[in-house]
Image 1 (cartoon, rainbow, N blue to C red):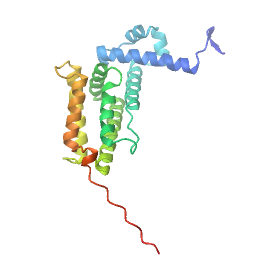
Image 2 (cartoon, rainbow, N blue to C red):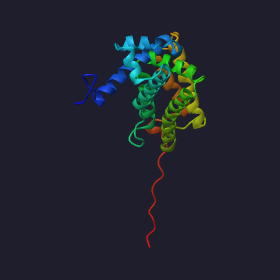
Image 3 (cartoon, helix red, strand yellow):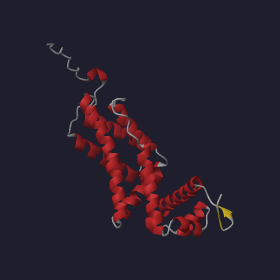
Image 4 (tube, rainbow, N blue to C red):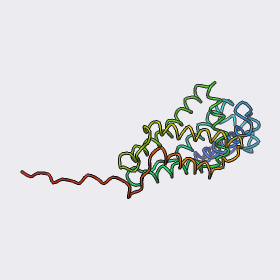
Length: 223
């Protein structure tokens, strides 16, 4: 094993674990202090590392903040995976996607981070691009599920599917802001219940017995 300064070099896995610890500490600091209030020394203290170690992996505070936001956003998107279309009822898939989104990691911390990311992105093109990517990815998950439900008769939308998607996401964003500020009636269980009721009303969810019958197959004439 190679060494650096008399110490064994870290393995690739150990390096990734160290970076993950640093980024997790940075996200905690962003949640507590806001993007502008994050300092290298605070992150170093939270990660139980030296400032030199933090700077070895991240040259500047700006690079650290961007990397922390990117890691957090990727984690959220990766954990909220849509079901394989065709293998699960679209309504159950939508309910599960909303449930997973609300229960990935600490929802309170995530809402604070989302607000900070939105505010900071107004002044940083890289953060804005990251924000757009996360929003569009999550929007596509919902849109695919709604399209699948329309196609198989599970949904009979009261509005255009695109409007339904935007309405659900707008309601979710509003709840996130209210939850982050500690507003009454914005606990996760109530948010999930209201979102499901809204989705059911917008999409005209049908039970299996209410779905229109499939067109009978006709025999193909033979030569």
